[in-house]
Image (cartoon, rainbow, N blue to C red; front, side, top):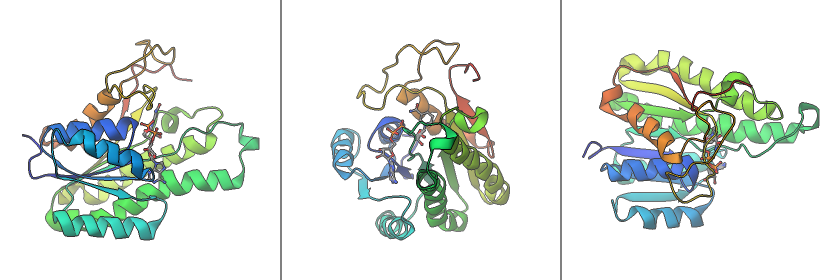
Length: 245
Ligand SMILES: NC(=O)c1ccc[n+]([C@@H]2O[C@H](COP(=O)([O-])OP(=O)(O)OC[C@H]3O[C@@H](n4cnc5c(N)ncnc54)[C@H](O)[C@@H]3O)[C@@H](O)[C@H]2O)c1
């Protein structure tokens, strides 16, 4: 299998895109390190993955807590010896309001989780990727970071920052074997649906439907694969041909 002997760390893996991504990598032989603030759900995911692999470590971790990130990544590195692929997927987005109504605390919360969380986890694994001369980092941003979503100024700003960080970091590390890319989903099927192939109507895309969590996982998986060996510093939208708002 393609990911035999590869170790993949996924944040926010208890539901939605993160969970579908864990399934995809597990089906292809990867060893998995899964982080989430919802440990109960992570346990259920681990049980579901047991049909594919028993090499799954799960951690309760709030990615906006740098000490916690450093603790769990150190433990995972002690267990597995390396991390080859990092999928920075965890994020907060279910928060809508006009700019003038969003409190500074809410802004800081989204920046802490979406942006600083991505920074902390990346910092915690990058050095050993550089030492190994191999790494794949895939950040999950959003079309909101490209076009800007009304009533989501804070969220759009954090995702735009992740896209810019991806491009800048790729320029620093691509020549050393670490490829850094970003995926920007449009409308994704509800994370609450357990079926990774579920989709529903959406008038936000010319394709007329949401993207399934597995379609998103497939893109992340491809970017982590050897077939994507000449792709770095890119933001790839997966949005069913988005009607730009
Ligand atoms: N669903 C969409 O329509 C959509 C569209 C564009 C981008 N995205 C992005 O895709 C990613 C996944 O979203 P989703 O909708 O599949 O799942 P989701 O929003 O339902 O869940 C995200 C996961 O991250 C976890 N999480 C939240 N805060 C965390 C923290 N501080 N530390 C650790 N884990 C934390 C949650 O518990 C959850 O498991 C997010 O980054 C989101 O911004 C989603």
